[in-house]
Amino acid sequence: MDSIHVTLAGGKSVDVRPGTRIEEIAASAGVRKAAIAAKVDGQPVDLAGIVDKDCVIEFILPDSRDGLDVLRHSTAHLMAQAVQSLFPGTQVTIGPTIEDGFYYDFKSDRTFSPEDLTLIEKRMQELANADLKVVREEIPRNVAIELFRKMGEDYKVQIIEGIPEEKVSLYRQGDWVDLCRGPHVPSTAAIKAFKLTSIAGAYWRGDSRNEQLQRIYGTAWANRKDLDAYLKRIEEAKQRDHRRLGPALDLFSLHPIAPGSPFFHPKGTIIYNTLIQYIRDLYGRYGYTEVVTPLIYKTELWKTSGHYEAFRDDMFLMNVHDGEYGVKPMNCPGHCYLFAARKYSYRDLPIRYADFSRLHRFEPSGVLSGLTRVRSFAQDDAHIYCTPDQLDAELAQFVAMTKEVYKVFGFDRIEVTLQTRPEKFLGRVELWEDAEAALRRCLEQAGFSVKVLPGEGAFYGPKIGFDFRDVLERSWTLATVQIDCAMPERFGLRYVTPEGSEATPVMLHRAVLGSIERFIAILLEHCAGAFPLWLAPVQLKILTVTDNQIEYAKKVFAQFHAEGWRVELDSRNEKLGYKIREAQLAKIPYAVVIGDKEVESHTVAPRRRGGENIPALPLAEFVERLRGEVAHEMGEA
Ligand SMILES: [Zn+2]
Ligand SMILES: [Zn+2]
Image 1 (cartoon, rainbow, N blue to C red):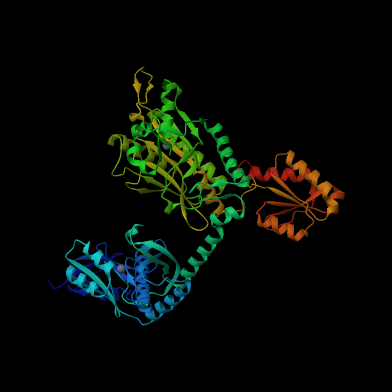
Image 2 (image 1 turned 180 degrees about the vertical axis):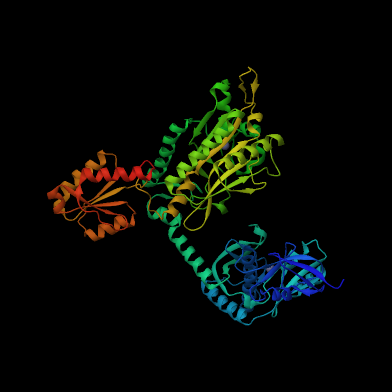
């Protein structure tokens, strides 16, 4: 064959001779400089690779998702090269890419310091400027083992020994070599914008019984501008970090005496309870009834539900005198007992049980983080039991409730996902198919464009997730609804049909806020601690200018308090500017200033969080304004 036919993404095509380098085709397509790798028939490859048969080529540009991945992994290599040239005797292990960056784990006698990161970055820049060609080479596995053994790279030897293929690929740049699948950038000069971000401890193969390694994290982007934007974003994230803000605003704390189990301080508890009360009020309107169910059960419960098989390692189990018990990690199995406690007819359905009960899951200590990964939490959890005919209406009602709640919190950037049957699942396949179809129908009717995540449903049923994107561009799944394809049958739940026979009800699991703990963390970071007026733990702070106004200030305080506002009085003998700054730091929505003028005219001079002064006005008028603001926040006005 004299020539092969190469189709370029975008539709154009070229005929070239077999063995042509992909970079030559890139040149003819005008992307020789821009591309850093390519996909041949969907497979990522180096630009230095060749084509020898008809194929489709898509060039990978550095600012695409694939491009960033190649770039970041190449930067991990660059970092490892820099580390080994600066600190001889350091061994390399693995260096994968992660979201927004990469890391590499090293074995070294030296404890890397933040100053070392600056040194390493400098050497990386020199190596990038040197424009070293990145060259792929394939060699037999045993030759590779010999090569890395001679280099003293014991970990690489172990890795290669675990590879089944007879041939392995290496990547060289200058005098440095690493075992790698690739692809990589054609030259170190393609790496233009990177930064090393932190050092952490790690274990070989992630196992704490193995040797301790040192992990260096970094990030890399297509250009300086993207890198700067990212660094600004993580700086902003640090400022908003709920693990910093929570204790600073006196909302909650954590203590090793109860790992992963937050202590909510009085102010945090106000937020906690106000959120629950808000959902409770909605439940009245959406026809839910609240229930209280046990925390501790005999483990038979989870043997029936299937959780004992699938979830046991994440549970707090205990042996007491008459057998094994567990603390509930979720409410559903308990609610099935509740449903079975009396006989229901189709006329009684749907039944909607809401439960704010405390739940406990044994998360490994390594993943615990602030309020987002905890062992003790509560959800705005509910289970709905209905007839098959009622399913669509129940799903639609859930979507309506979710929309209403998201609007109140200003969550407007939403992505909806549909998570389907996983490999390991309980229940009959027909039930799963019907359930997935119902969820699709519901989302179509609601007009959402849906991202399907195949195989990511729970083991007992498919799921819809409403993912919210916060100000830091992070995505969080909050509201979810699942159709249960297993539990109603496993618990033998029945209701009486119009024909007088018995049938199994459809069961839904749903939550809108999800874990209240996690929700508070997300909201805290989203609003940087400046909660809306209706939710702020302290809504108003009265500030006196001098001691002359204390008496009037006390009266104003008593009036706000009597009207149900969460109010504090600061009558300390401090400068007004200082008191205002304190109220500002505590993110209190309103500082209410009272000076001689206000005492004389029986008014108040409110100052909004952020600095806007409202002209002095009578107290009653201000309270009217506050009520209007809350109503507006709650979507009532
Ligand atoms: Zn690699
Ligand atoms: Zn459930």
